[in-house]
Length: 91
Image: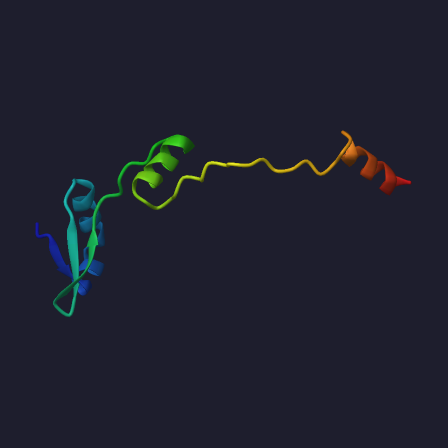
């Protein structure tokens, strides 16, 4: 089976192309005789969120967050500010 198809052939033989790609081959689709796209298998993703984030960082798609050098200042001087606020609204 060949590895290059015209767009017309690719539409007509999509199932066969997908089967070939799942076997590990890459397929090129041409438009007017010029290579336009490459169809290849999807790389298996990690099953955990941490594994997926690590993979995306390694590929340069995500940038890890910068280390915080300062703390966010505490705005409420006394604990329970939210409770007091809600109590004031219910009156």
